[in-house]
Amino acid sequence: MNLAPIYDLYSDYLIVNQGQATATSLSDLLENKYSHDKITRALSKELMTSKNLWKVVKPQIKQINNKEGVLILDDTVEEKPHMQQNELVSWHYDHVTGRHIKGINQLTALYHNKHVSLPVGYALIEKDTVVFDKKKNKDKRVASICKHTLFRNLIKNSIANQLKFKYILADKWFASVDNFNFIDSLGQHFIMPLKNNRKVATSKENQQKGSYQSVESLVIEENQTLQVYLEDVEFPLLLTKQLFKNGDAEVVFYLVTNDLTADVTEINTQYQKRWQVETFYKSVKSNFCYANSPTYTLKTQNNHLFLSMVAFAKMEMLKTVQNTNHFAMKRMLNANALKASWKELKKLKEEYKALTISPKYTRMKKSAA
Image (cartoon, rainbow, N blue to C red; front, top):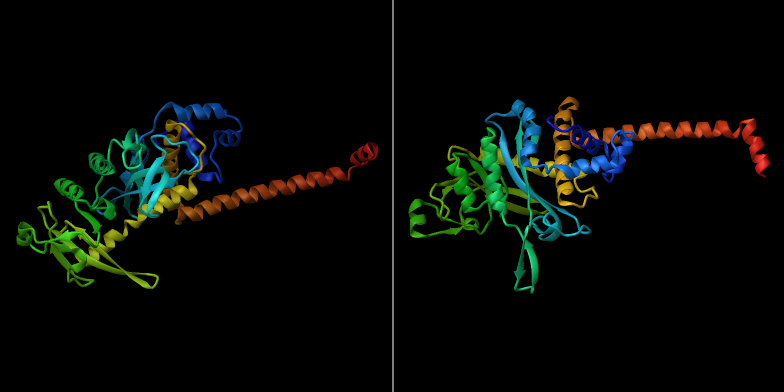
């Protein structure tokens, strides 16, 4: 991997670390080969970006880059309630919880193929502009570049990097007319869900007349495809209906694609791969200290998140040797660390026992009394 030595060490440290990630604990781990000040200065020196991440993962991508891959885009919000607000740590709407959360909002482009997933680009949503909110009568932060623009930039960069993929996958938040038109103009195919209340026309004639109806009012069976049209989208879309259980409730899911040659099985099978980005976020947060860093400056916060993704990419390639997953490998590393600590504890106890039964220790104890 194309990384500075200290960054390489830091990302390895994130793989084996079990708690808060600090420059001091890394320095201790390296037996002070690098002082904690040197590590902190390195994290503060150069701002790592999506371009740097691509350079890191490019050699691994070459091994899996072909037309059977998929490009998955999604964002996440990591709560940071106690950190001082800045351009990066701000208030973001979280679609999972349905509320605004103070934290970090990251948009990621994940490439998945041959059971391997690698982040190939990302954007940290920076609310870098302060405006006055008339309704709340106070200032608030907003992003100068909207998330949909960043979404399209990540796709454009992936194509410029010569990534090959069959479909672009995203959730319904990104299923906008502008995004559909943009992806189609690039000659790429997408699969995304529509909200139940989205309006569609069932023919080109109905679209021209402005005769639309909600998706949920369509008469369509689960294993059926239907050609539909969206307002301001000139090309037809193929729509399918999915039913799945959520406890006792039955949830309906409407998927659309601009690939008119796809059948129901292809659409559903390909879209299920979107779950890989959820696995990515779960792993990078649980296994690689994504949020467990006391860094405070914008640059060090950015670089720590970048190196968490580098750690994920390293583990993703290492898992192919073990034929297992990140969580199992992390448990193995933690178990080995626990065994080493256990052996060290036994050694200390034996040394203490040997000391307490020695004549010298007995004389010292009597003298103290």
